[in-house]
Length: 292
Length: 105
View (cartoon, rainbow over the protein chains, first blue to last red):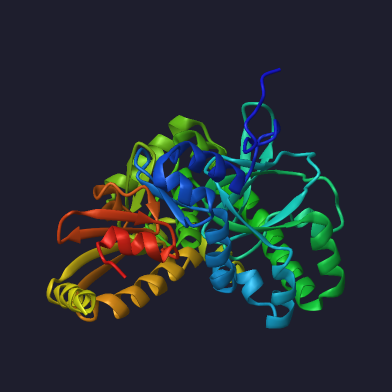
């Protein structure tokens, strides 16, 4: 067995900041930068390959905790003293696009409160097919089963927009939920919104045309990322909408022809949000109100 | 006596020459905040008004930092007078910051 460097993640796929750590150590190999990194004096590392800045866990924690109440609406709605108490158990993580937080049947070890990340909840029908039944961003939390007293996750939770989130261990969350009435209120309110969204999505998938559903879904994503630009592959969109890739292409072309969006190699830009809202099915307005 | 005079001349030279620096930081992350505070203290003591400092937040302007070849933050770059120099970290090691800036205590 070959010896492993101390920083390497465990064999099970590392999540959150462990991935960032590994990447950071690969980026800063030597020199004064590495010395400063080793002595804890670095906040961020710039990746010249991906042209992005990666925050170190401590810096991320400090920035997230400084602004987490605004970053996640569910936590922001809690009284200050409850939120402060929870801070000790909340851990900032960086969620990576495509990362699977739970598979159906997994025992959830953490709940996640997204900041600028957003996570899709997918019903996995078989190996080739999955269908989105929920989308969670800064308005809520991932790991609702735990709140409802169920150990196993019924759906796949997959990161659809990379970014920051706060996570809490399952046991700590259960304990907090039992003693904190405002957290219960917020979590149950969100559970109701998720249930209503799933119902609406089921009806939408059955009755509405793919371009209208795509428009609805793009607007929902926009509301969560608070940006008109995001990255999504055809495959991902096909799972979101429960259609084949060709169906996604046709729907995207139809919206592009109406100059509502531009879509190139997975990079989506919403060009006319008002027009896209008009092109979306009525479900968008209903789910938008549910998401607060 | 001679030593005192030399010190005075040196300090006057430091005041007359405008030092141009650029500090790359990451928002209000702890080391970035420390670096700004440490640098401000050094500038106040040794450079008075004889410096120009540009602070660049790499989270807001990553492209700017990438174009300048920055790898980590905090990163202090002394641009002029030559020789150019750089210090990385939270600038709490006062001696190495002064040495990089060419200031003798």
